Image (cartoon, rainbow, N blue to C red; front, side):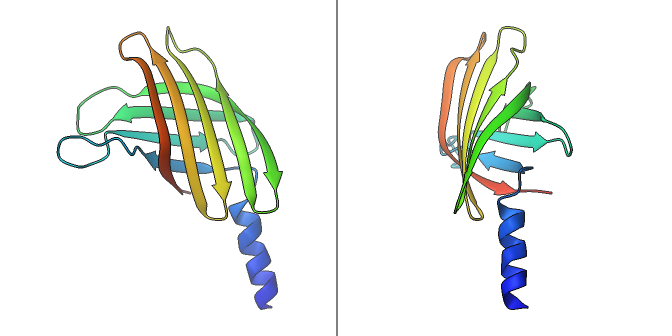
Length: 127
């Protein structure tokens, strides 16, 4: 019974659908994460919505519709999210799922911010 429970948890952790919330390693002056990112994959669809925002400010998030391409392997999954252009803004996201751990890198090119690369973001699964 215990092995069935462990197998079920592993299946959930590496399932094709994933929604997760990330914070940047870049910090504000007060020591909190400077940026956040939310990745939401629609159930039963190839569509993924990704939003990136500056924390601690009243700003509008950058929002993109994306498609995930991924490769599953024994201990996790590597994903690349290809996003539609939003106005003059572009985004590429790479995520590495290893068991319950998720790390992500975002490459945002914005007409107002220039190029912003958020590497080694720490993430957690959300439902």
